[in-house]
Image 1 (cartoon, one colour):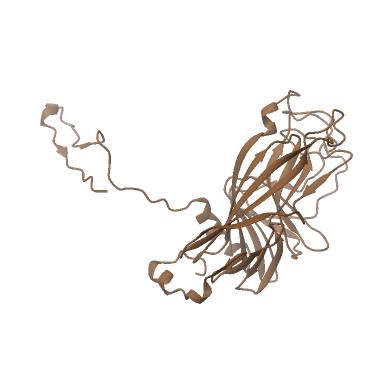
Image 2 (spheres, rainbow, N blue to C red):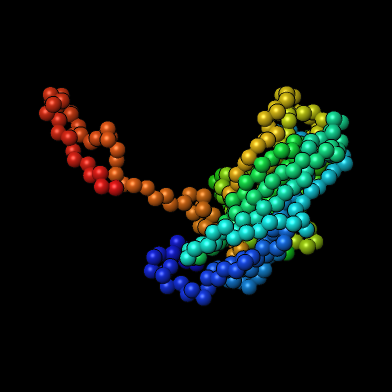
Length: 334
């Protein structure tokens, strides 16, 4: 199995020639990546020879919705990191992994205007730091992003464009991997407009013609997959910042979904940390789930001894004098 966890002897046998690190990228036996000036990633899948370009840029839009639903403004405004300078450093390099640190600053409107029809002219700086790690003998490119959110009323996503044009995305759901159409149905007669925002668990995958790109995550339940002439893109929601539990004036929903009350802490101000990964692959989603589930539930190493006060004793089922119940020796060697 291509994605089986490597045993020690397999790691030792991996040719060093397939592990390379340079100033702006690295490669192992599964993939090769480089970091562009704006912090986006070009990733080549060495199984298929295909390169996915411009991965992991950030896109921010206004959010005039509530905790139930996203809604745009009448006068929408989008801010991205595409073409914006990033500070890129190699923060760690060892025999088994390399990590690059990508620092970017998003200048975002501070909030919505009072009429909620457009974003404010006041701007705030939102620092974003991503650490991108490639392991020597592991498929996938692993990202940890930390954001100090100082803006209100917005939706911030990590975006992964592709040149794939499938009809459906395969999304890990509660009890199955579900195929979901990318074209939205008509909205006539609906209380709420259909939306590309959907729920995911461990991954979302786009596959076509024997190759694909999946985005894995740890605890990021919201994802959008949208088609275009250039190809479909996966956008993982990092932040949805709103100030209301529910409202009755959304452009995309005709009624309130719950109590119309303010929820200021839903603006999600402060520092947040997100973990997700890029997995190019051959085949379809069946090549993805073993890696995604291992990423979500990794092995943990711990000492095998116990602490004082946690003792084992024989069961006293005959109501003998407790002093006669023998303690069972318990090794504490670690």
